[in-house]
Image (cartoon, rainbow, N blue to C red; front, top):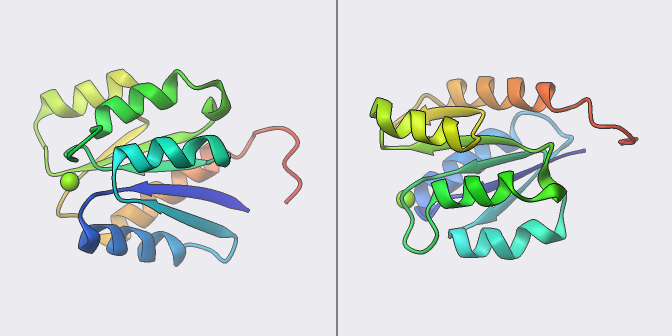
Amino acid sequence: MQRILVVEDSATMRSLIVSTLEDLDDLVKVDEAESGFEALRLLPRDDYDLIVTDINMPDINGLELVSFVRRDPKHAGARLLIVSTEGSDRDREKGLELGADAYLVKPFDPGELARIATELLASGSESPGSSD
Ligand SMILES: [Mg+2]
């Protein structure tokens, strides 16, 4: 079972991302957070393989969330994908510098999201002891 957390304050965008990721595989379970704050509440409860986050959110933004996850030993193996309307090189560099593995600019083709998520999940699957 692969666990994914989607952090996005826009309900429309969140449901698009979640449904795209749920269609990847039967063995994927997707949780949703509508804010960075809610993500911080969910993160200690599960071991996520992939965290997909927006940048612009009202409380804790996606870049802060990325740095939090990268300092969290529980999620040392988690892959991080930023999905943002901020398409400048500066934002992309900042996200990758803070520890994101990939950066997708909105609006995006759902097939592109599916392709990147599949790659990230495959690259993170070497974690020891996972029997499911
Ligand atoms: Mg947003």
